[in-house]
Image 1 (cartoon, rainbow, N blue to C red):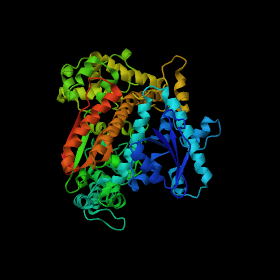
Image 2 (image 1 turned 180 degrees about the horizontal axis):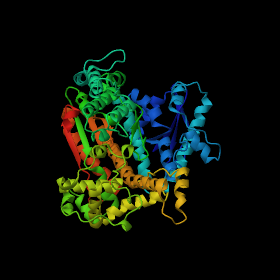
Image 3 (image 1 turned 90 degrees about the vertical axis):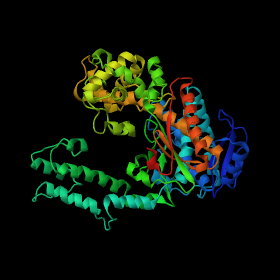
Image 4 (image 1 turned 120 degrees about the vertical axis):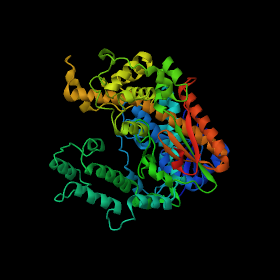
Length: 599
């Protein structure tokens, strides 16, 4: 059963029971208390709720103690369908979808500040007729989406998983991650000195700033927060550099370098997660992040504040379970290479991925590196990019940014396992060193289907085509500017300069997208499955999610059941996406009192 929902005036609203195809199964029902009506129908029927936006409606239900099992989030699904049609970024609201289906002018989506400026949900001043119009639009848009989904293989699961993720996000924002403000303050004091006042630097940062200036000589004053001043000071010292990035500074032999590196690290902590962050984001012993489901084009989540996806390792000491409770921390091991193995169906690669440690299982292949891959077998995205390293930032997982942060390991000092890891990362991200070139040759010869899967995605990107995840999440199309730039080579000449770089860049993006977006699909399926199992257990709550890692806050006596639920959910996610693949998706799980003790 599905029930469409529209919020009305003064806490009331409108419900409409729907068939699975979205057609109304009965008349519209007005209710004076929408929260109570949803609670009653959830207990009696456990329907799939159809509403415009989980992020706007569900928090009010949670505050009232009402949690639902399933929903269909019209805005999130509209975004997925627009993306699949190559119309990424078009307005996704119910009224926009309604207008689009009727051939009327499409209104822009409201900005977040415009949404908050509207009258409070359940307490607005709209007249009775407007809520009726809302339910008509909700019902019509849902029916249109159901018709579109029916023609797309796998998309029904994607819509359900994305909507379930929205429920999880809202619940995590409400429940919060257990956080000790006292522990956090003590850590900051230990690392930075006592809390400063009046916008001054903490004592440790000021000491480092003074020593940095002194390192450049008595006549030089350098503000370490000013890249321009740092560059000027190094140039005056006969060490001209193009940037103040850590990997650039590490090449310099100057006494200011270690001081600057330490200052940058501590300053980042103070700015992003210092006392101001603590005052803003932690209350009642909980950190309550504001997740944005599907906030990244690959399907990964973002946050609208609080930096939940970038909690520094040192501050994980402040994440402490309540007395009598435990934290179950679960991390998907080597998720993206396993996803590639399952996607490609490469028999040899799949056999290796059926083991616990994929890199170790592949290590025998890399005892003899072999020669570099030959040009004819490689896409334009790979030719000419070796030696510049993989793309940095939003396109890479947190784990892989850490791998590449100081450059990949080199030469004879690499173990066979490290070689396997380097080759796989290079294949998925489209970059590497001269060592990676040789290792990619081995990967291509031994696992041709896996290599070709990402190569095909890269070629599709270079030609301006769209690529999709396993369930149908679709990459954005190239811009008009990209097409104009890269069309310069249509006369038969090979693209050069900016055009060649644009081709390589999009090829790297699409080769990674097919893997990373499918990994996001798998993670959403894991979340939905785990949420259902935790609900059956009772008090255990999902409280944190980061790409391929989840944290559950649970009564200590239920920790063993939660561990089993995590394993079962990972296996269910594998089956939902990949059927009977032999590829395993093991979860590394720790039951701890403090998040920092998990790794």
